[in-house]
Length: 383
Image 1 (cartoon, helix red, strand yellow):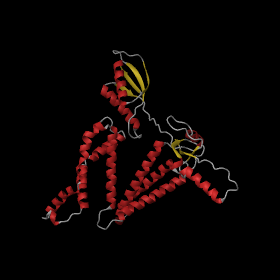
Image 2 (cartoon, one colour):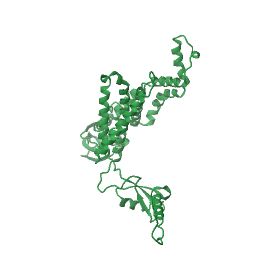
Image 3 (cartoon, helix red, strand yellow):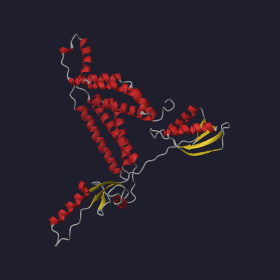
Image 4 (tube, rainbow, N blue to C red):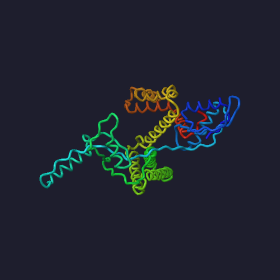
C-alpha cells in the first residue's frame, strides 16, 4: 500500500515507472487531481523482484522508495507484506493402454496361462510400447482417469482401453492426504544438499584436526551437530506425517556424509595434499559462484556481460597447463637452478596455473558478497 501526494503528472510518471518494472497496480484510490493541484492517491500494487523471502518486505519497501526518489515524489510506503504463490505438487500418473482381452479359456486356466496373463499385465503397465506418452497430474485416480481419456486438440482420440498408473513403487495417494508445495519441496532439497556438503567438509576437517585434541575441533563438531539438526527439521517438513522416517533419513544422511568426509581426509598419503583443504576450496569456489549467480540474477545479461566476462577470463588459464611453468621457473631461479634441471609433472603445472588464475580473480569474492547482500535485500538503495 503506497500513498502518493502529487499532481496528475506525477501520478502518471509513477504509474509508468511501475509498468516499466512489471509491477501491476491492483487498486487505485484518491480524490481528483489536476496538473496544478496535488491530491493524495493510494495505490495497492504488487512488487515483483527476485531474491530470498527472508527480508523481502524490507526489500519491497526500499525498491518502491527508490522509484519515488528517482522521480522526486512525495511518496510513503504504508504497508508491505509477502505474497506466496506456491502450487500444489500433485501426484504424477502415466497413461497406458491395456492389451486386448483374450477369449475365454476352454477350460480351467493352467499355471502357465496365469503367469502369462500376469506378465502381459505387468508389461502393459510398465513397458514403453503400451504407454500413450501422456503425463498427468491429479489428486486421485478418478480425476487422472478422466484426464487420460480426454481428447485434446491435435491429438489422437484415446482408446477405451486407456487407463492410468502411478510410478513404480509408488502407491495411490490416500484420500485427504496432505500434498506438498512444489517450490517449497525444491527449496528443502537444496537445503538438504547444502547440509550434506557442510557435514562432509566439517567431518573432513575434524578428521584432519583429530590428533591435535578436542580443543582444536570442538567448534567444528558443534557446526556439524547443528547442521544435522537442521537437516532433520527440513526432512520432517519434507515428509509430513512421517517423523520417524524423517529422523531415520537424517541419521542416514549424517552417517554417509560424515563417513565420506573422513574417508577423503584419511585416504591421503602422509605428507601429501590434504583432502579436507581440497573440499574446503571446492566449497568456497561454489559459494563464490553462487554469489555471482545471485548478482547476475538481479540484473540483465546486457548489463553484466561487458564487465563480468572479461573478469572471469583469467580462469581460462587453467586450460593451458604449460603457463604454470613460469611460476616453477621463478621458484627454481632462487636456488640457481634452471627449468630443464627438474622434471615437473603435468598435474603440478595445472595446479600452479589454476592457483595463478584464482589469485588474479580474488576480487570475485567481493562480487559474490555483493550478490548475497542483494539476494537478501540488504543492498537495494546502493544499486
